[in-house]
Each structure stands twice: as C-alpha cells, then as structure tokens.
Length: 136
Ligand SMILES: [Fe+2]
Ligand SMILES: [Fe+2]
Image 1 (tube, protein in one colour):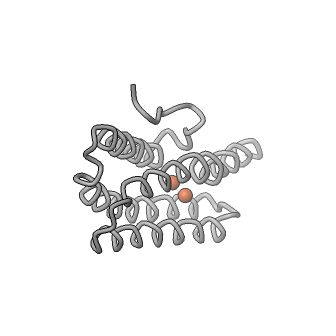
Image 2: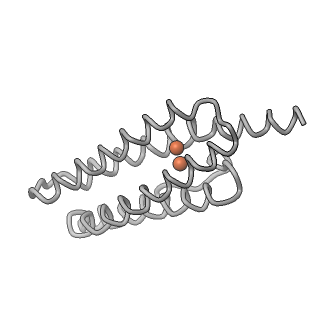
C-alpha cells in the first residue's frame, strides 16, 4: 500500500495543479519505499533533483493560475512557495556535503508540504473559485 494516498481532500482544479501534486505524491511514495528498504540515502539525491526542477515548474504554473483567477491570497501564498524552495535547496546542499539524514528530513518536509500547504493553502484557491462561480 502506498505511504501517502491521493484523496479528494487534495483535489484543487481537476487539471494541471492536481497533475503536479499527483507527481509529488508519487515522489513521496518512491522515497518512502526506498527508505523502508534501507535505500533512502541511495535514491535521495536523484529524488531531490527531480523534486527541485518539478517544484520550480509547479510553482510557476500554480502562481500563474492563481493570478488569472485573481486569487486574493496570492502574495502570502508566494512566501510559502519561496520558503519551501529554500528548504529544498538547503537539503540539496546538505546532501552534497554528505549529510546522512537528508532522506528522513526530506520525507518530513514533504509530509508537511502535502498535508499543510496543499491541503490548506492550495485548497484556498478551490474555495475562491467556487465563490467566484457562485457570484456569476
Ligand atoms: Fe501546489
Ligand atoms: Fe501552492
């Protein structure tokens, strides 16, 4: 069974944002499977690489969609994105310096990102879109 399950409470746009988030869930599960087999330190570098480039693209895509939707919380939301990118690049740095606990730190960071950022902050976009549709 997957470590982190995709669920309805993660659905935002039934489109590009969800597709990006599903890829993230797949990476979280990949990292977890490797870690539970004792292979975390072997795969973490490669997962971080994919994660950094995917997240960079995702953030751009998501902020663009939010701007088009005139999402009022966009500027605060961007702060959360910058912070997450910083944490990812710091972990990448630690990995390059030979830190051995990067896999577990990454796994904790991603768990928070999925359950706090996506489930709560990204979801505010869904709430905003629904309200907008109602006003039409
Ligand atoms: Fe997102
Ligand atoms: Fe976001």
